[in-house]
Image (tube, rainbow, N blue to C red; front, side, top):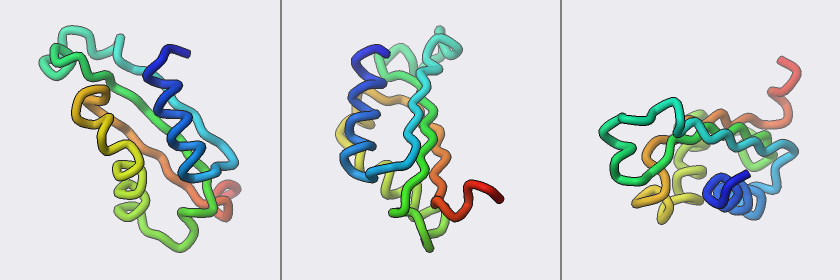
Length: 91
């Protein structure tokens, strides 16, 4: 894993203590995209954490964006988020 995805993963692990944390770098699929010119990457994250229990999708996404806020300014151009509570895994 390259430096950026690993940095994203480390922050998510420290903040959410997730049961599962996946970070996929999809930047290559967006080569030539205007936003990619700024140097920010495209990432997809999947988190399963008790922190999300009882919270709606909007709040979960805000929590993830808050965790990565300073990286959103330069390192991350686009972020797709799947944030689940443990109780939702088998549904």
